[in-house]
Length: 405
Figure (cartoon, rainbow, N blue to C red):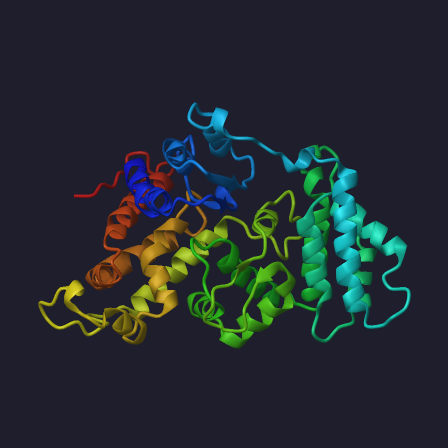
């Protein structure tokens, strides 16, 4: 993998910059959100091998201090070539001043000529609650920008919530306590009148936002999780302040900030069981993927002529878009196995659904993956399925063993 990255770096960055002979800054934002299971960041390793070839170029990299990221910066190739700046080392007084300016500017725009709002006391409280997290300030402002409700009423909801949700004995979470309070307040305000069935719908839809391998649009979430699109749209609109949500129902939706998935999937942080997304929801997504593939997959969905190669079909992308491979089905075909985990939750249901899918739709699945140019995913999927089957049955059936022939 490193060799492929090195080749791409050389072709896409090093060679063009050398030929252009310009000085510039390249920004790599949120490096920690790149999927990378190596003990040392593959991107940083490749970057370290190439950076000396392009003098005059500076890289500005932002990341959480994940272990493989910090080890990458400490490696011999980058250790002496980088300056590390830790945001949390900035004096809180300086950060608070910046956050207060942001609050004052944004809230005064929302005041709509209303004198005395927000008060200095409210601004002080918001700054204390932010606790140095700019994402708190942005999420708060987004929460106040509601189409049909007064900003002052929305601010009162935040003011009535406690300024800390840190629990005794959980000092490690205190740094996130202000965010946890805000996220709890927004969720409770959005779904205050829900009954138990509505709460289950909220959790299912949110699981398809925070757990999926790649962001899905509301239309695909509705299909994948078997809800009406209007239901999904209304639910997502209720918490728009926490999401990057577009008016186009076919545009992917994703969390505004990674701290929200971290919060809602953390049982010690999201203590309201109405909203907590447990690991069991991965299994719910697996089951929906398997069911969707069984329902929708059929022979030659894109009407490819017999004996024709995919590369020879000039309008292949149009056939994929119009020929019956909707976004939810494409996601199911490419990513169902990524949601398998070792929990025993509904294991028998998964085994049954997996058996039915492989017996009835296996060849159609391979055909769709081939059209999508992702047939290699099949090997990963089957390997993961075998590993999962062996793991979930190891306790109840010690001699149980599955292998690929």
